[in-house]
Length: 103
Image (cartoon, rainbow, N blue to C red; front, side):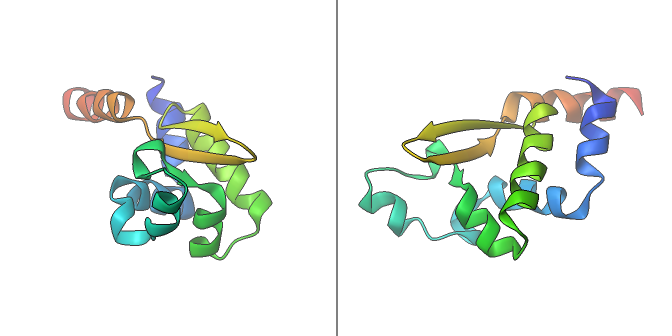
């Protein structure tokens, strides 16, 4: 975990919002369509659902999600033609500890 990279990734309001949404996806996204496919939020949230909620272009959302993933804050899983993102809680905890101990 590189703290500077994480800080930069979280400095964008939309990326920060994505992290907040993914913290409690049940409050921000409809899990019914996932259940119908035999899935759930434990695998993450589909890029398309994040894009719809954000109201941003799919390419922008994908780039933002990739930035968060590159910082280690998200993991992704590809199922068929869809990619699902979820928070990487161990890295988030390490970053929180860094902030608490170093700042």
